[in-house]
Amino acid sequence: VQSSDPPTDMVAGSNQPSNNEPPTRFSALQERLLCAAIHFFHRHIRSDKDVLRRMESNAAFSLFHEPQYHSKPNLNPIFPQSVNDASQLHICSFILSILHQGIFSVSALIVSVIYLSRFKEASHVSLHAVTWRPLFLTSLLLADKMWEDKPVRNSSLAKLFPVLSNAELNQLEHRFLREVGFRVLVKPDRFCAFCEQLLLEDVNPGIVKCVVESEYAQTLQQETAQEPAVTQEKITGSFKSGSNNFA
Image (cartoon, rainbow, N blue to C red):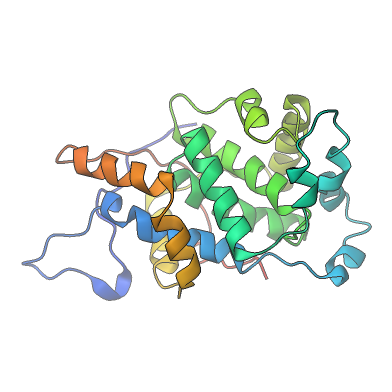
């Protein structure tokens, strides 16, 4: 897989800078993009029983159905107790906790959303309260492997989310890749187009509050303050611009 540096500019299409205004760097928009990505993700998660009935014969949905992995000894009861929680607060807090503890980038989160869109399109699997955590973690793991020189290992992610063992994560990762046809590349211009789409999201104030008060956001602010004049981040692959295939 080949990678390339994305533009350090990240500007919404309706707010192109004039000749006298410098473009906005991606790093300066990370917090807004983080809020928008979580909002985008949350509003596509279903919790109704109709989805469960429709997905009964879908093998991919069954594999990512989280309750089947809850029989592990000494598993913290918080995981089975929260499996049906599709609330804004739980989803936002869970994502932020994983990003912070796993030291994942905002870019990896955005790419993971793109991957999930592809997965939905290919497998016809709906994001649901009982599947979204395994799906999110699998897509984030793959995005991190595409973005980072030293990605998070499957075994490390299994420690962050002990519902899934290392072997089970490997299985989910392989199935996810098969469903998307191993299409995991994201080109810089396509990435920017999707970011522009995210910046148009009317983000719920509750998500903004949750993000702003998080340790992860504080880390982003510190990194932005300490960054050099030019920030280089990696981006790989390609995706369908403006994809919104979670409904």
